[in-house]
Image 1 (cartoon, helix red, strand yellow):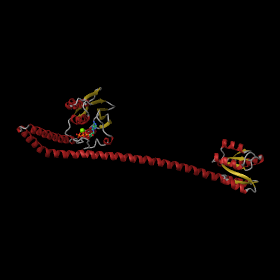
Image 2 (cartoon, protein in one colour; image 1 turned 60 degrees about the horizontal axis):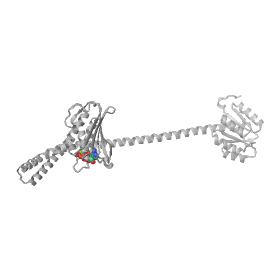
Image 3 (cartoon, helix red, strand yellow; image 1 turned 60 degrees about the vertical axis):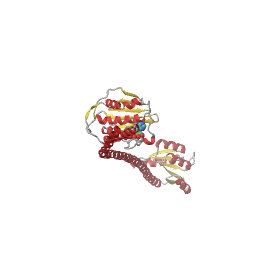
Image 4 (cartoon, protein in one colour; image 1 turned 90 degrees about the vertical axis):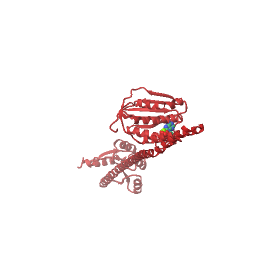
Length: 398
Ligand SMILES: Nc1ncnc2c1ncn2[C@@H]1O[C@H](COP(=O)(O)OP(=O)(O)OP(=O)(O)O)[C@@H](O)[C@H]1O
Ligand SMILES: [Mg+2]
């Protein structure tokens, strides 16, 4: 006898109201190594299925408590991995077909032929194995497809991120190049323009000395003032573009800010600007070039002063966040409009009739040389705060 063939220790449930058939079938199945379970009604059968989850159910169509078709539908609905073979009386082949359509895997005609029963059980078990394996593969495939899709999305996202970073870097390079080009241009221009400018200035001064007409003197004075302004612009351009030679020292940033502020004392007093300077911590010195750092703050302070109304408020705040030195320069001027906010650090962007638009790009370029940055922290019609961050540790870049 082929009793406990491990291949066949499958559970098979027999549902039949005839105790003799149940006994006969379960003995036959047991001799084949199956674990046979039995039930006399559909209700009992469903309880057994829920408890043991057999591979196969051999179910008589004619059962006392319930119609065979509805029992079959319920089993297939609730336990799809449970395959059902339906037994009908001979002459009810049409019924058998109907049951197959409703989800039965096979049918048997009564009275039973044991050989056929075993053959069909084998066939259905094989079919079940293949179908379930197939389902698993499909589920796996779905899962993999889903994963691939997720990776794809992630990849697209990263590519997008990198592209944007690249674009930003390119824009920055373009802006740095603009500033570098400006250096050459400014140096050449300074040379070419300053000579005639000196002559204009000289002759105007001569004329002014000789002129007796007060009106003429006034005009000559204005010419001299404008000449000075041109000279100032050239000076600024040359300054902005050149990283003139470095003198690296131990520099305290709070002192640099304070000294830069002093340059503006005349304007501040004339316009009665209220200044507050807050620095409550001892700022550690950093290795830096004083003139360069001054350029950052003079550019930010002059913008603030230019923006402020008479009696406006200028506040400077120095603090020490982790590893850094932060300087905030705030004014209560009119703020930067949202349409201009993206442009203020671009070289030559200016909303001022006499602005060159190099103050902010230069300030930022220098801060970045020190691995720091200049940003607009907040801006609104009530005022603007620029934030300068400089790391406390300065390495080799100088
Ligand atoms: N504190 C501020 N409040 C409002 N707007 C500001 C402020 N600082 C800068 N801006 C805006 O940013 C623009 C660019 O500033 P930036 O200092 O680069 O050039 P500029 O001041 O116009 O000219 P330059 O500094 O070369 O004389 C300014 O024209 C102005 O519109
Ligand atoms: Mg400026």
